[in-house]
Length: 164
Image (cartoon, rainbow, N blue to C red):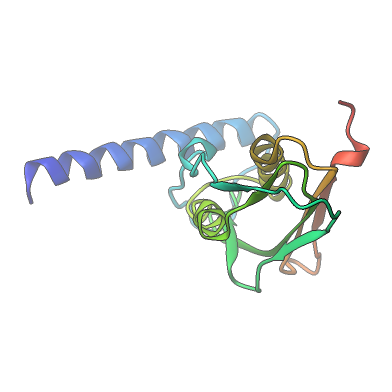
């Protein structure tokens, strides 16, 4: 293998190994052991950090809703190493900006190898979108995850319910 590519692969493996070990140590503090196989995953910091945006200059108030199709949004459960699939819904009334959809899609797919809980990923997406949109009238991010163990998890963050 090309030495430059080999070094790149080694760096990626080391990053994933370290984050997986850190997650396992964190879980052990609470007496939680991973179920099933242990698989490597990346930390949330590897997600795409930027989302392009477009100025919104219309005088009308409009509600924008983006909803992924089933199977399009996923991250990795740090407890099982398995993918967590969910439907992500983003709703907002634009202030100065709207999201550019192609870069938003790339942003969402950047979570596919990230080890993060369902609750944390929803909060992180909310924080990232709020930073990019700057001044929406309101922003809601909701994830509804596939049933696991007979339980459907829904996580919702609403800017109108935050202490800001």
